[in-house]
Structures are given as C-alpha cells and as structure tokens.
Amino acid sequence: MLLRIDHVGIACHDLEAKIKLFSELFELEVVAREVNEEQGVKEAMLRVSGDSYIQLLEPLSPDSPVGKFLAKRGEGVHHVAFGVGDVSDTMEQIATKGVRLLDEKPRHGSMGSSIAFLHPKDVGGMLTELVQGAKPAV
Ligand code: CMX
Ligand code: CO
Image (cartoon, rainbow, N blue to C red; front, side):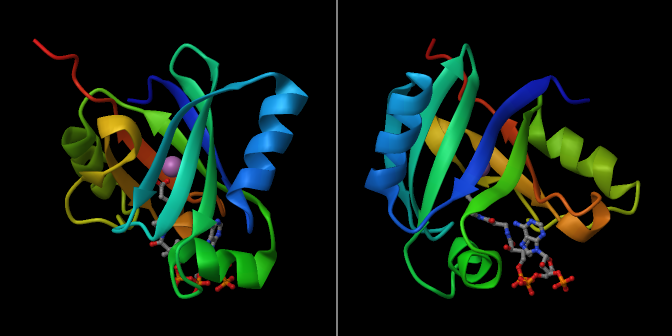
C-alpha cells in the first residue's frame, strides 16, 4: 500500500531561516518553493535523495493547520508523507479500516502531486499524508 516515505513536514515560523539551516546542515538542494493557499502554507521542498524530501512549512495565517500547530506545540515535525500509487484508491482502502480521512477527495500538493491527510489520532498520534506524485508528461 505504501511505496516509500515521500517527505517529512516540518512546521516553522521563518521559512527562509529554516531553508538556510537545513540546506547548509545536510547539504540539501531546494527543488521547489510554493505557496499553497488551500493548505495555508508557504513551503519549500529540499531533496534528500530520489523522491524523498524534507518539506519546510511556514503558515500563511495563525488559524491555518500549521499556524495552530505552531501555537500549540512549537516548531518541529508536523507530518509524515507516504508515496502511494493511486491516492484515491488508498484513501478508500484506509477508510474501510476505520481511520478518519481529513479530505473527502485528493487535493493539490507540492510539485503537482495529489495529496490527502489521515487523522493523527487514528494513526498513533502521527499526522499522515498520502502522496501520489505528478505523472510524467507524455
Ligand atoms: N500531529 C499530531 N497530532 C496533531 C497534529 C499534528 N500535526 N495536529 C493536531 N494534532 C492533535 C492535537 O494535538 C489535538 O490533540 P489533543 O486533542 O490531544 O490536544 C488533536 O490532534 C486535534 O487538534 P487541534 O489542535 O484541535 O487541531 P484541529 O483539529 O483544528 O486540526 C488537523 C488538526 C490534523 C485535523 C488539521 O491540522 C488538518 O486538517 N491537517 C491536514 C492539513 C494540513 O496539515 N496541511 C498543512 C500541510 C500541507 C502539505 O503538507 O502540503
Ligand atoms: Co506534506
């Protein structure tokens, strides 16, 4: 069902400062910077290797998911994202196991991906994201 770890999402107050920290510390390349209004974030993807990334997330507002998380828990790991083949199929399979889906249908994620979230309370306290990568252009 899960193919790989796609990324670990890190909540931060200052995106530029954390890009500098992670890229210098681990010698990582920033491969994408985006604003995702729907998710309420300004973000950067830093490639670790292949299709595996660190996603740095700065909230666009205090009442967004990442804004609320920062106020409650401070900076740090916000979610883990797993690569899947077909995000809609995986959502269906997981829903049959009684896990609450936070999205009714896939949404737009980083770098053209389709994403969906699972409730952290049903996954051992870990906010979980499913990611279907963008299909290569034909
Ligand atoms: N990891 C683990 N637990 C979390 C969490 C997180 N990131 N965020 C919230 N929780 C816990 C809270 O601690 C709280 O637990 P307690 O009741 O024991 O205190 C519980 O879940 C409910 O949290 P809350 O603070 O009341 O927050 P909300 O219910 O308003 O929202 C959540 C939580 C997960 C439903 C919401 O953040 C959400 O829908 N997230 C999905 C979208 C998202 O996170 N987008 C940003 C990333 C975008 C991207 O990766 O591209
Ligand atoms: Co993510």
